[in-house]
Image (cartoon, rainbow, N blue to C red):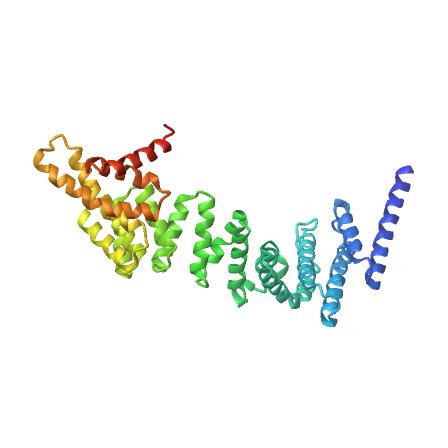
Length: 397
């Protein structure tokens, strides 16, 4: 008896809340509170299948949308962001309810009662979800932009819109997928970015941009194999875009130490653009590593003649001479006859490495030892003392 009274009282209180929310919605007041109360009721599993609560919730959200839409029309404290956010909530409410509506009956049969009606009602508002995404991108609010585009794209897979074939028939879909990927990338959410990688790369729209966002995502995830595969696809498709080649070359040359792959990559790059300074500098570095000093020197001199403010070509040119001198100096078979050649190489290296130091004064790690060795061998006492003191300070002596 006591339990029955409590249950009856609870049902009466719930009906009262629903009735009050309906009245507020009709009057256009306390709309957010009405929405919150319905959401609270739906947290109770006993209420999850109550269509009337879902409808009141939807009407509370829809009324908020209408109020904001009217304010925009009348230019009376317009809340454009709020309009788009409410439009999205309308979709989320009916999509959530559709999963309840599509629950199997006792015989396991699925017969959603409201799917067609709800889908038809929402379709005219769907363009506002797309527009909302663009609005938030314009406001640099990429978190909300992602939510809008994610909801827009998900309509193409959600059971509520079965039969509409948005993925195939919606002309906005490729750009919406791109914008979802872009927004996820901008907020550095790798999980959300990963969700859209396959869909985004299946279409060629803005493919260059998409491949870069994907590469950055795999870099953040430290997924080297997928990163390299993405860089290869990017370079194959857009060899002149100065994103893919430098990263691929760094991977093959600096990380893998794969000179054969590095050589193949620079061959392909220079076949596309034989005058590109990035491609040429990479080639010069590779020639230096392979001991093909004449080729390295020719390229370095060419780069310096085109832009004498670039530091790296000076270092490569200097190291062409310096490395040869060090090889002679370290040889156990070095004879007096080789001494002039040794000193000549050090003299040839000197102006290039000094110039590199002038352009990159903080890079002591790269010019410090070469200059120390050159000054020592050329008996340049004043210069040697200066570099010796500098290197001792660096070593904390």
